[in-house]
Each structure stands twice: as structure tokens, then as C-alpha cells.
Length: 311
Image (cartoon, rainbow, N blue to C red; front, side, top):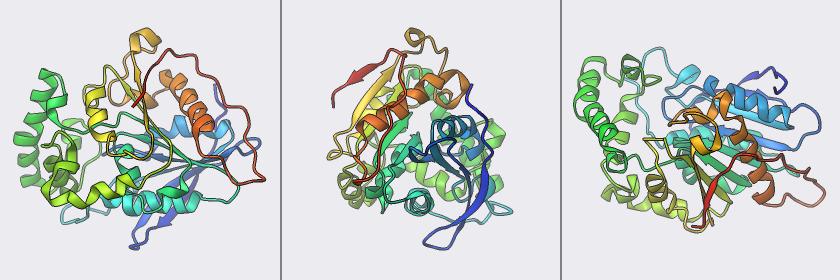
């Protein structure tokens, strides 16, 4: 068991002036580096508490955050609240990177689903020495197995529009799917999920590829084979946009690994602690070398059998 660490509450101010609620978990023992957790769509930062506490017990100063419109960063009502889905990366996550950057110490990022999308949106991604992302995929229903495909199409084409018409935002909580989402997040997400390669195939988003092509930080994308929303083909369809990052992929067979079901959300639950160890190990081994005068300790080990792909 990792030692419990008390988080420090703070407010980040983004470049466009929006206040973002964040939590900072201070490192215990010698500091090995800094780590930002980039969460999934509709998932509040509290969901990542166990992972953040574990990483802090390994010597990392860890920051989690609630994107605007989510968790502690949402307004009194989402009705009438307007924003750009891309702001979560370009503004909110970028503010966390600025807050955690420190000369002489490596800064890493661990992403979940949208977190892997957001990295290419960061105006300051060059300050991050490595990204390890779980469950990142293109979101297109065609990458999903038949039954999940039907459920997703029902959400996009029937339930979602009906709920948005009534509430003025996507009351995802009604469907037991997570946090309620601002209407602009719903509309943009719905549109981009109609394309096999997400927004890279949206005629209105032709400019976005250049941002991803500019990324040079090492990246590992890890996906469980029982993750119905982000199977390996879906991951590859999105992550191929990081064409100059030399990204790598890892597939997890939960049965072979002895981890039990993972799905799209299980990566950050307690039974997947071996995956956390693997993520920190990979980042320490493959992340960019920090400036002269800093030091790295030996990375933690990994005992879970994984299938790696050369991309």
C-alpha cells in the first residue's frame, strides 16, 4: 500500500482568465520529478486520487485538475455556459503544465482518454518530458464491437439530443455516464466521433494536424483489449497524428495480466496498480533527459505481461 498523501487545493488561472480548481499532491521523500494527470472527458479529478497518491509516494509532485465546466471548475449552472472543447487542452491543461514546470526536474504527464488527445493541443507541450496515456482512441463507433456501437449510436442520435433539448446541456449523470457536460463539449465531441480519425478528418479542422506534428516528446499509448471505447485500432487511428514523436503502443490482455476487467475506466482503479508502476517506469526510462545537474533514480519495476507494438 502506498502511503496516503494529503492534497493541497489551489486555483489555476488560465491564459484566458478562467479559474481552474486543482489539487497538488506533494512528493514524499526525495523529489524525482513533477507529474500532471490529464483526465478523461466527464471525469472529475477525484477519480485519480489513488494514482496521484501512489505517484507522490514514489517521489513525484502530482497535480490533478477539473477542466472548465467539470467538477469544482464548473459554474453554478451549465445551462447557457459556452466554451470550446479544445480549451481543456489549450487553456486548462496548459495552465497546469506551467504551474508544474521547474528547471532541473523532469515533468511528465499521465493521460486518460481525452488526456491523450489534449497533449497535442498544448501550446507548451515542449515543457513535458514524456507522456504515458491510457485508453486514448479516436471515438468513432465503427472501431467498437457491435453491441457497444449500437449503445453509442443510441446515445448520440436519440438520448443525447433529447436530454440537451430539455436541459440545455448533456446531463450525462442521468445516464450514469459521469459528470454533466457543457453543450459545446457535447456538440463538438458528437461531430468528431463521426469520423474514423476523429477531428483530423473534420473539414473544418484541417489546421489541427500541425499542432500534433510539432510534438517531439516521447509517448506511450496503453490500451486494454477489453476497453470497448478505445480498442487498439481506434488508438492507432488517433495516435498516428503524433507522427514525429516516435510514439509507442502497449496492449494489455487483462486476463493474461491477472488484473481482472479494465474496460475504459479501470486503469486508475486500485487493482490496476501494476499499470501505474509500469507507467512511471516507462517515463523514467524513456522521457527526455533533464538539464545537467539534475539526477534520476532507478525506476520502479513492472511485473505485468504486456504486448508492445513498434509503431
